[in-house]
Length: 125
Image (cartoon, rainbow, N blue to C red):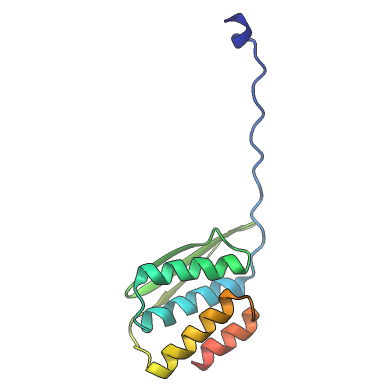
C-alpha cells in the first residue's frame, strides 16, 4: 500500500495543436452542403458526406450541423475556430444540377480535384 502512495504520477497527456485549415475548405463544405440539401438529400446523409469530403482534405474533425433550412460548419484551427453558416432548402435544384453536384461529390471523395476547382464547379451549378 505504501508503494502506491509514493508512486510517480503519470505525465500529462500531450495536446496536439490543431493544424491550419484552408478557409476555402470551410466555404466549399458549406456551399456543397447547401447544394446537397437543395438536391433533396436527407440531412443525415449530407452531414456524413460533408465529413467524408472534409477528411479527404485533411479536416476529419470538422463539425457540421445540417438542417433543412441551413448549414453550419466549424473547423478548429491554431488561432481558434473558423465557422461558416449558409441558408439551404430554398432553391430546389433541377435534375441536371443534381447530377452535377453528385458528380462533383464523387470527384471530391476520390481526391481528384482542388478546392478552387471544386468551388468553381459549384458556382457554375
